[in-house]
Structure formats: structure tokens, C-alpha cells
Image (cartoon, rainbow, N blue to C red; front, top):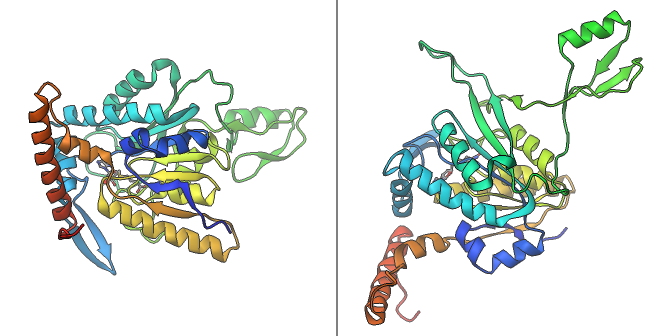
Length: 360
Ligand SMILES: C[S@@+](CC[C@H](N)C(=O)[O-])C[C@H]1O[C@@H](n2cnc3c(N)ncnc32)[C@H](O)[C@@H]1O
């Protein structure tokens, strides 16, 4: 059992990863092979949420940093969301390996915007799919078709890269028309659960059709074991498909809006290394708790797992607060930096309800 803290298992801030020392460690691991992000797309639901603890429901109010992040993300509606996601996608592109893949999850509220920004940042030529995740839920009495799907945009950093990973991991049974044709030729075929043909007397060997970009996966059932109670938690089956298709064992993956840690949980189970981050403190703690549970299960199954490390607060917030106007005189810049450092320290202390140490 390797219990060494591993670079690939940190909660960290995106820009500190790009600009700080972890960058060279990420590069030493071959860069990020896969990024999946599920940024907030429900205006108003980022940081205040209803959570269940021991059968009771509490409304979790945003803390100071979350309030600031919320203002930055939604203060000017879709405009500020675009600015937020654009900035972060540029950082992600730089961290992604040359042969890496990125999946961005959104729904009808923002899919037009996200597709546009992805084309801009990754280039239209690197567009691979718009995955439609279709699920069933209660029908609403509306005068339009039910909105029962999300979009997941799949791009590569460089579609031409010969080492780009794409594993065909699932197959779907042939259409009724194809089956009829086969039956007409008196050919029999049976399929396993994933659609792969198992027994056949067909002349040509075939495995069924590789999975299309329309995926039918159930939303998490309230009684499901994987349910954490995080309001925007995505099903593990969805992440499993993405991770298996676009990475191999031992690869380093990342999710920079990790929420309840679905990406990390599935990555760990599938033997991938991972980095997750989230601006929300509750999300980081939820992910930590979930990962401890995953490790426990792996330990009791006799499987290897690695320890992970949690880093709190990166440079994003610090730069946001202590950046000064470079056109000012040096002395004025120094004065502003000192003033902003003090305000930043005060903010952190307030956010964590902490007291400064006199001799520190
Ligand atoms: C839709 S949820 C992700 C859910 C996750 N896929 C899961 O399965 O649990 C979006 C997450 O983004 C986080 N978030 C919102 N704004 C952010 C920002 N500017 N930077 C990083 N995380 C942010 C929220 O705290 C929330 O946990």
C-alpha cells in the first residue's frame, strides 16, 4: 500500500497550480491527460444550498470568499460568467497535456455560451463531440418539450496528436433495422450488457456499434449508495464513461469545480491520479470525506490507494486582493501592497473565524 502523499491528489487552486511549484510536478507526471469540469450553471445556487445532515435539512449560507466568488461569477449575469469561465479555461488549456482532453458540462442555460468560449480557447478544429446526457425525471406541466438533458462539450488540446487517448469502452446493440436484416440472412447474434456481441454465427466478426454521443444514464436515485446529498452531484456512471474513454490507468486527471468529488472518487477507483479544486469550503470538505470513504472501501477490498493532501486557498484570491496598479510610483505601490496585504489577512482571518497570533 503506497501511503505517500501524492502530487496527483491535491485540492488546490487553479492559478497556483499553473504558476506555482506544483506545475513542474504536474509536468513531470506527463501533464493533465483529462480535465472534466462541471461549472455552476444554475444562477443563484452556487454557494448557498440546502444540505441534509442526519436526516435534517439545513440551508448553508455562503462565506465571505464564496460571496465574492458569487459576485464575480454572476454579478453581471452571463457576462461575468463568460469572463470567469474564459479566464479559467485559458489556465486549463495551459495545464492540459498536448495530447489531453477536456470535457465541459453545462445545460441549456449556458450551452450556447460555453460552446462559443470553447471554440475560442481550444479552437474549432479541436471540437470532438457535444455529448447529450439524457435522464428521466418528473415531468413538469409546461407548454414545451421536457428539458431532460445536459450537454457535455468534448475537445482535445490537439486533435492531431498521435498519442491522444480515446478508448472505445462501450458498444450499443445494432438498430432494429440491422437486426431484421441479420435475421433475414438467418444469422443469430446475442449481446452482453454493454452491447458487445458475445455469440454469433455471422460471417464477419462484429462488436456492435461503438457508443454514440447520446447517453442515457439515470440521475442519482435518492436511495442510491453513491448519493452524498450535494445538490449538484453527478452520477458516477457518467464520470466512469468519460474517464475510461479519455485516460488510461496511472494518468493524471483534474476537476476544478469538483463539488462533492465525483471525479476524484471515480478516478481513484479506476487507478487514475487526480487533482480537484473548488472555491466552496463545503465542497472541499465533502470531497475529503467522500475520498476517505473511497480509501476505506479500497483498503477493505485489499486494493492499493494513495494518500491525498489538502491545500487551502491559492493565489487566485490573494492576487485578486493584493494586485496593485503598476503605473503608480514605486513608493505608492509599496504603500498599497502593505494596505492590501493587511486587508487580505483580515479577510482570511474573518473567513476562518480565526485570531491572529501575536508572535507569528
Ligand atoms: C455543479 S457543481 C459541481 C458538482 C460536481 N460535478 C459533483 O458531481 O458533485 C459546481 C461547483 O463549482 C463550485 N464553484 C462555483 N464557482 C466557482 C469558481 N469560480 N471556481 C471554482 N469553483 C467554483 C461550486 O462550489 C460547486 O461546488
